Length: 224
Image 1 (tube, rainbow, N blue to C red):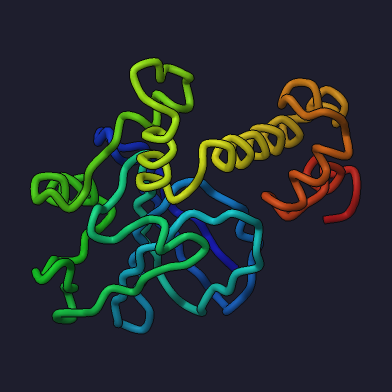
Image 2: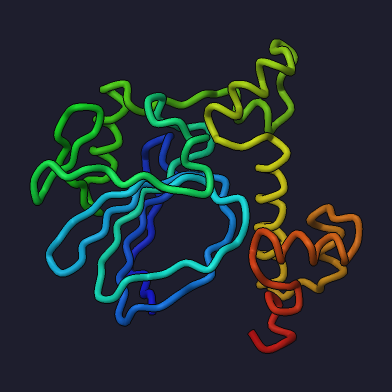
């Protein structure tokens, strides 16, 4: 079982959210597709570890270890580590090596593990060191403001920054929007229209792929 203790926004323009949770017994959970990557620090039985997790292109069943605490830093779309390509972590992760019990190696230097309160400071240090950058072309591509760029340039830079294509990001975000609408009690047919799906079958395929549930399961009309 996973218990989310805290979840907050950040003052940093490159951080979407900072979260903290803990687990009891070992279990599995449904991990939905996400277009953003994150850094996750785990503490279990006094031992620390740090993982850089890439975007996920489909819903999967994930394992949660017993009696562990987690700190997560989820980055905004378009933020990336140039020396640790997002494309290499698509549907995967990289475990960073430990330097000491309280630090880890990153690009040849030892970094102290961040905590929930100083996560923003940790991110700022990464930015100042040039280990974390943000490409504004990602926001421009999603908003359709790309007159000064060639299609090839947009595709190349978008893929480099996110690990995904523009189309893939839009499909994932549309599924998240549909899920949120259904959870708020919006009918399935209205969700089809509001989220921009062609029909109910299109919505169902999308949710099953990216969320791991059918529209009826999300809205609570059938047993989950």
